[in-house]
Every structure is written in structure tokens, then in C-alpha cells.
Amino acid sequence: MLKSTVDRVAGATPHAIAKRVRRLSDRALAWLFVAPSIVLLLAVNIFPLIWTVRLSFTNFRVNRPNAEVQFIGLKNYLSILSDKDIWLTMQATAHFLIWTIVLQVLIGFSLAYLINKKFRGNDLWTTIIVLPMMLSPAVVGNFWTFLYQPQIGLFNYAVGFLTGADPSSFSMIGDVSLAPWAIIIVDTWMWTPFVMLICLAGLRSIPSSIYEAAECDRASKWRQFWTITIPLVLPFLMLAVLFRGIENFKMFDLVVQLTGGGPGSITELTSINLKREAFEKWRTGYASAYAVILFVTVFGLASIYVKALNKVKQR
Amino acid sequence: MSSYSVTEPSQRQKWFAGILVVGYALITILPLVWIIATSFKSPSDAIAYPPKTFFEPTVEGYVNVFTTRTRLSEEQLQAVGEPQTWYDKLVRKDGLVISGPSRFAERFTNSVIIGFGSTVLCIVLGTAAAYAFSRFKVPLRDDLLFFILSTRMMPPIAVAIPIFLMFRSLGLNDTHAGMILLYTAVNLSLSVWLLKGFIDEIPVEYEEAALIDGYTRFQAFYKVVLPQAATGIASTAIFCLIFAWNEYAFAVLLTSGNAQTAPPFIPTIIGVSGQDWPAVAAGATLFLVPVMVFTILLRKHLLRGITFGAVRK
Image (cartoon, rainbow over all chains, first blue to last red; front, side, top):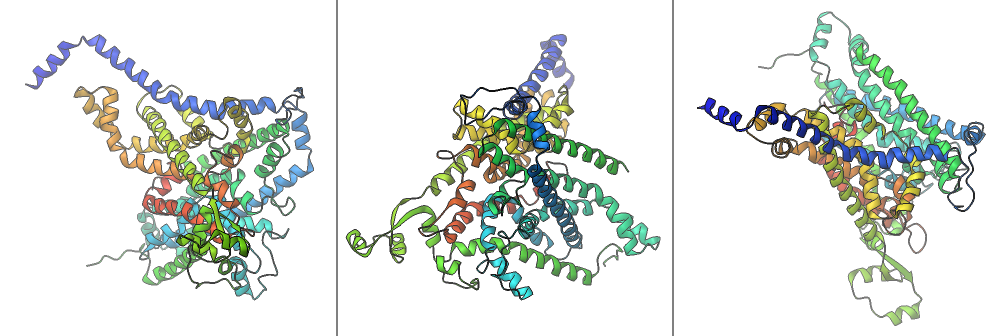
């Protein structure tokens, strides 16, 4: 019965043709499916990037469309790399990047470690902790300026309540020495759950048999933590750091709304500085060179980091 | 009979961990609770010192976020006549009259149109590409996938200049279509990577069975794979929607009058006399609460979404 059906189907289509049509349609389908995405990304990402590179060698300014565009070689790059202000924004970015990552890794890992103790209701509390991460950084950042107001702000009130300081005696976003910490606090508040979730996945991926074996060998809890937990969570932790690093290197929305780069230019991270050059001073060519430098930096650092990550994974 | 396990934390450890985590959670949602609470305060309650925990709730903030108001003198107020509606009465208390709608509703609608538009496009393009990457021998597959992911590393401001120029010459600046295209491109990397992970998990045998039954490749994709991937597609869609919803950098640089979305608009809400915090909070609440609800719905797939499918639990 079955054989006769197969025979009939086979007889109906000549073998060679059937094979060719199917293979052809598979390949055509593959191209049909992939092409639109690739074309869109080329148009909206790669083409603009190439354009940026081209503009970076000129003195073009968007607000002077009639001025003659001159090819000025590497002049933009040289003047950026020798500009002291830009090195200051790089320092501000580095300060922001390092502290947010350190704090988020420490708090995020600790939280994950505690949640992994599987107390009752841990799912509910995990979901609550995760909420800030998914919200719009611009809208939330804007509201934090209200929380940071001297006197009436909740943050200042809470600090005053806990330390006894006068809540109107300090301004988190108005003070040169406090503003860099103001943005670090909000970013840490927002993104610690991200590191926490990844660490939690790492902790849950460790089979309990390893701990049981360690227990049989009379390894102390402390030793188990350093020789089992940390090495096995490390690849996850490094992945979290990679994501946070890239995201915070690009940081724009949250900080623009919080401090706008001020006071002065103490919290002017590279993206904000770049936006000033490109969309306020309209130095298009110069800003393009700046953008290329930033992109090469992110891409370069990320590639080196991924290599390191793969090494850790292989161990 | 309960078996004893050396790896199970003791009751005391659980209590200790629970208290610390709950403490952190309560502190961490305080700013969010404060946004919602402030949206129901009167302007004077909002800026009271010490900050007010208990207050008489009012919807003034919500009325203010949707309207523009002007302050009138006594004679002018009398000329206008008695307030007619409840919201007229509410603002009349402060000697104001409603002079028209604000642009909030419009901005919110823009966010909805651009958010949903780009999500639909992203899912259509992403599902097709993910299926092809998952099932076919696409030449340079790994390179293409990496290329798609790498588009995410670019700082938005870095490509904003030429996109601004390109959109200007194509007439796409400050249009819904332009923003939908842009957000689709931004989120495409996420949707391709996430969906590829979901489709990889569907056994190939199902399609092979369908192909043997005489389905064409496309039918097999449409009738077998898509229904199987429904949950994955739904959660990917919510991620794309949330990211498009929250996006700020492109929105603030490329839109102004016509297609501006809510994130650049909400911080600019001001009242008759200075920053109107209850109105800002009301706008923020309306904007943030849908995302909170979606986050709770998504909690099982959250980790996967935020790591582009790199960590699956």
C-alpha cells in the first residue's frame, strides 16, 4: 500500500527535475528571506557609515550647504586626537564606564547569589528588581532630576534622613564633584538587574553534583565559592560586562536628560560631546572623524574582549 | 520522606538572603512608585518639604499633561463664565482656563504608530532571515550573522549625521515612515538573533515530515515552523516594541514637529509657572506602565531577550 503510493509519486515527477527544482527553490528562498534584512542594514547602517568615513576627510558643514567642500586629509583626526577637551570627555567616559561596571558587577552578582538561595517568593522579587531596566532611560533620567533636587527631592531627603546632613546643602547634579556620581548612581540603579539576571543564569547552570563532590572532599564553603562558583560563573559575568561596556560607551539618553553633560562639561560623555559638535556646532566633517574614532574604539575593544571571553570559556 | 541535600541552603540562609533581596527590591522600585505617586499629587504637594508620602490624590497632573492652560485675570475669568466640565473646574481652582489640547496625545500616538510599525516590519524581516540562517546553507552565514550583530555596536550619534543627510535628501526627515525604517534597522539585529535561537530549537524533523507529505518549502515554513515558533515570535516582538518605544537619541535628533515620539517630548512638558512635575510624572506614568506590564508578561524570556539569545537559561 505504502510502496505503491511512493511509487506513484516518484513516477509522477522525473527524479532529476524534482531534485533540481527543490534545490533551486531552497536556495532562492534562502536569498529571498535573507536579502531584505541585509539590504535594509546596508542602507541604514553601512551606507551611512561609509558616508561618515568620507565626510571625515572633509571640512563639510551641514549649515553651510553652499560653501565649497574641501578634502583636508587627516586634519580632522589630528585635531581631535590633540584636543585636550576631547581627552577630558574620554576621561569622563572612562570614569563612568569603570565605576558603573564595578558597582553593577558587585551588586548584581551579590543579588544573584542571594536569589539563588531559592527563598520563597524569589521569582516575584526578581521581577520587581528587573523593572527599571526595561524603562525608557530618557523619561526615567528626566524624573531623576526631580529626585535629585536639593530640599524637595526624595534622594536628597533620604540621604539627609540617613546621614543627618541638610537635604538642601548639596545638589547631586549641580555640583562638579557630585555630578559624575549622580549619573553613576542612576545607571547602576537601572542596569544592575541586567548583570544580576545573567549571573543568575550562570549560577543556575552549575550542576549541584559538583558541590556534592566538593562536599565529599571536605572542601570548605569558602573554597567551594572560589574554586567552583566563581570560575563557572565567570564566562557569564564577562558577557554581562561586554554588554554593559558597549552600552555605556554609547551612553547618551540617560545622561543627556540627567545632567545634559554639565555642570560645565564634567559629565560630558563622548556621545554627548559628539552630539554637540555635530548638531549644535554643525562641524559635520570634524564630528564625522570623531564618530569614526569612537566606532573604531568600541569595535576594537569589543573584539579584543571577545577573544579573551572565548579563552575563558574554553578553559 | 525528604532527602537531605548538601547543596540545599539552610532555612536561616534563606531568610537572610530573602530579607536582603526584598530590601533591595523595595529601594529599587521606590523611584518608580514615586513617579506614579507624584502623578496623583497637586503641584504644591509635589514640591512639599519634607516629601509627602500621604496626600490627597488628584488627577490634575493628568489633566495638565493633556492640555495647555492660560492664567486669566478676575474680569477675564468672569467673562469666560462658569466652568462646564469637571476638568474645567479642576484647573479653574488655580485661576486657569484650558486653552487647548497639548501635544502629548499626538506624541503618544506617534510612539504607538512608530513602535508597532517597526515591530511588525522587524518581525517579518527577522523571521524570514532567521529561518534562512537556521535551515539553509547561506553562503558566509557566520560572517553575515556577525555583521548583523555588529550594527548594534555603533553609537547612534555616530551614524546620525549621514542618516540625517540621507533622510533630508529623501524627504524622510521627521516622518513616520523614516522613523519606522530606522527603528526596524536598529532592532533587526535583535530580532534575527533571537528568532534564530527560537527556530534552531524546533526539530528539523517536523519540516522534513511536511516536505515528504508534499508541502513546498514555503508551506512547511508557513504551516509548520511559524506556529511552532509563535511564543518566540511573540516575545521577540515585545522586545522590539519596548526598544523602539524607549529609543531617544534618533528621535531627538531626527524628529521635531511631526513625527516626534514621547521620550523626547515628556521632559519638555512645562506648566504655566515652571516645570510641572505632576504633569511630567503623569506623562511618564502613562508611558512607562505599559512597559512594566509587558516586562512582567515577558519575565520567562527576559534574559534571552536582553542578551540577544546568548544566554538561554
